[in-house]
Image (cartoon, rainbow, N blue to C red; front, side, top):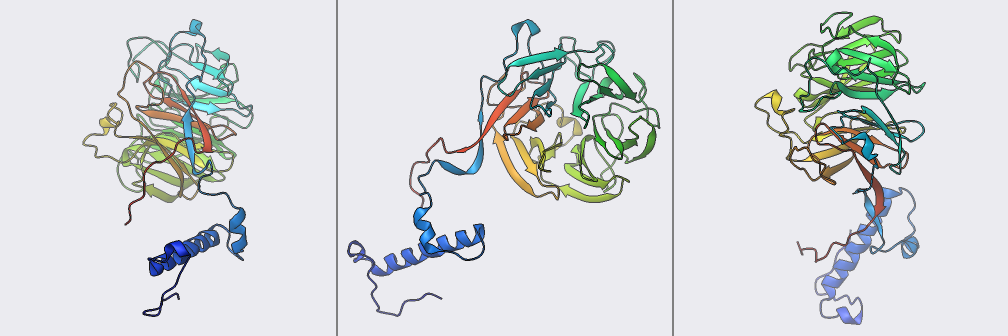
Length: 391
């Protein structure tokens, strides 16, 4: 398309007279790059004069959505004791942030600025007796795993150690129990350490995943409808269905031990499998029908127990998918050892994630104490110094 006749000298400014051909190729490449980029971002007619009014490359607007730690969030009253692990964080319809806590109080609520709103416990919901899934030197409600809100604002909790899913009001009072309290099993009335649930127009779908390897479908009143899945590595199998959510009439299930996310319809028909992308933990839909999850990139696992053994410290990532499995965004956080102390800006076993209306992320770890907030921004706060290599 573009060429130079041999021996033809093209001058592009007096100062570039020593290397005319190089200057011409540089200028041509610059114009082509600008044209291609503009055509990609805004297909159709391209006005070259428009480039004169666009921001220069020295603008403070970054093309990357970035996240900066808010070290002051949250402000928990000292009278409420110290943080334990925070396996789940969720934002309600009033933009308040709910944080589960593996100590008492078991649920703490903050506003987006980090101000403490209130907390609750429920003796019916949180049992201090019996063996705990997550052992600790201190007693606490370690059986609370993941939780969600339904359309009416009720809170549904995976009460893992008591083998049930429980629907609660905003104060933690139990309204409905699905399963048989303190009795594990694998039939229409028993579960074995369920991990998560999602409330849909078609009923409640449960990932019955720590003790069993299945998805269970119940009515909104708790009546058994169907179940599917078994232990294994085949397309219909699970190794730890760890989380479940829905968008429209599609179910999304974390098959954590098999390093994949599986997509079903409400009848249990397998529609798609997202393989080999990451080891995911939760699944949290957004208001614009995307899905946030977190975990780490795939690693070799000689034993499945390595997933929960605190050794996932090669990286910690948050990933946003669209409903078809395309990665929309990914962000990595510096890892740190598993410990009993809060390490602001670093993470060990990233277990809970959610986003507020401004796109800020709230994160919780399985064991390291204390939730963290990361402010969403496209402001370029740092400068990359040095020159790009010639090749």
